[in-house]
Image (cartoon, rainbow, N blue to C red; front, top):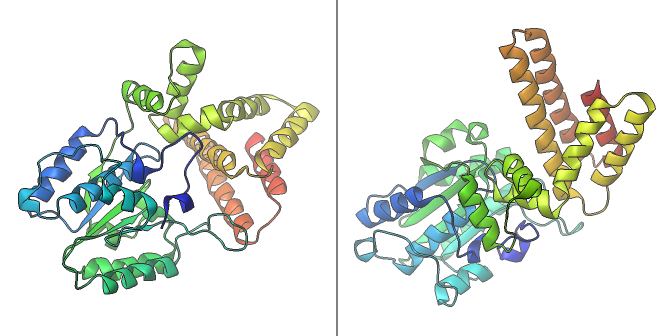
Length: 342
């Protein structure tokens, strides 16, 4: 799959051709040494919050393996990919015969990414291995992220992981590994990545031409992004900070003022090409409810904690139904905002 079909935020560098990786030196060293030993695991579950560099690390490691196909002669460390090297150019353009990137496909009718990685995408892995079985080369599959696999796709991947082809490597990315099939997790070596420190996040943003040079904006981005480059980009380039402020003000409002605020926010979140900021808002709302439930539980208010937990579940169900039946997004958002306000 070419990088153009991948979901890349405005201002970001597509992971296949990103020369920069910050904050994960220990993970890089582990992967390089494990590969050099010749005893590396055939499936690695790279897990951690969204936007901290999992995909960039996966492509960097894939580049490392394909550049040094003999583990015995591979270096014990990884370096930034050479953007002019044939291996890197092939990976970046989606033309590598030795690397398959499984991610959500584009819907031919809408031109937008589908909501899940389907079993048809996983079947591409079967064809990929069949076509390259006699080459003797490494064959690498990046599942990005495995959280997006629907049930049939997850079961299909599991079958391949149970009997992996020779000289195959699976890099399974996950933002929430607890939601994966336990049988998939059990067949992978877990590699946990932590959110970026403020220093590493600032370095990453500077590398994208968005330096955080002090002041209230920088403090807000560092605090709200929680070590995630993608969250920082959404805050800076997609109006995420304004969305959070509007939601906070809405919760404090009453009566007609609250209703007007709900409609203004719903208009923004349901506008054309608002998928990114809508997803950002849902994540923020989910974190808000979890924080409220946790605070209530710590305070001994089990009833309130239960109500917040139930509300989070109800909202997830509303979103699932809305997406499944292509319901009007604004009405769905208004329903969610009303429930959150209550």
